[in-house]
Length: 71
Image (cartoon, rainbow, N blue to C red; front, side):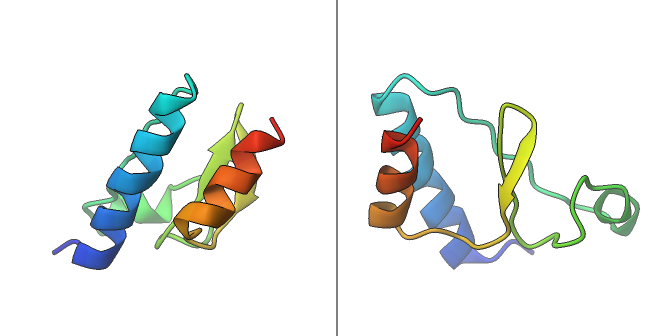
């Protein structure tokens, strides 16, 4: 079962990215096999930009806005 907190934050981050014209994709790892083959060892959250791993921390909205303002 997905974490409701994380899902809500993901929707907020997606809105911010789309507002700035930045593509945003979220993938939910639903099985053990999918999680074990994920591109990061932290399967709770992973933020990638242009295929580069940026962080495993779920950013608050202000921190995410700051991050994408640097792009």
